[in-house]
Image (tube, rainbow, N blue to C red; front, side):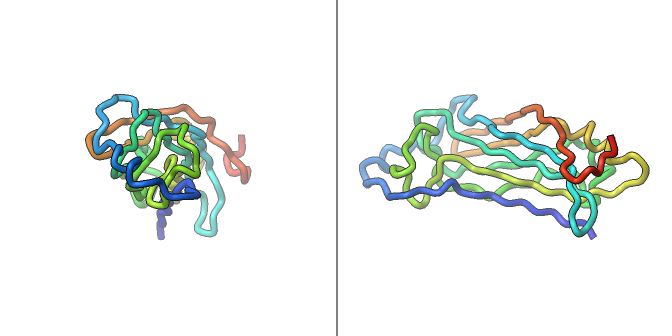
Length: 170
């Protein structure tokens, strides 16, 4: 049975801002480059249910505005459908109501906000022969779609496919 684990983690905030600062929140930002993808990682890992493809990273707000209703979706290459029993469908990661600009001090971010969204998407794999090497060849790019109130941006980053459990036999 295939299982998919998708997890979103809020970057912790230490204190709540005053109402005056919250009043300045942007409900929509039209910049084509509102977010940046950092720390992209791809790995083929061993799990209790067999080999899995794990994709992780973080997105941060590079604007000067607080962005509302931010959500992230991990996008996989359609060619991976043959190796993922659950399919390579795009899966959303839970969003965060308010994403503050990356340079905002943590103590100025309220409890309902964050400085970014960390994501991890694990997809169980199935196949025969050297299919894990084929999966690694198809998964060397992290692609996410970030949406927010008033905008959408696709982010792409190359990533070396890691093999922490020695499954690739390279």
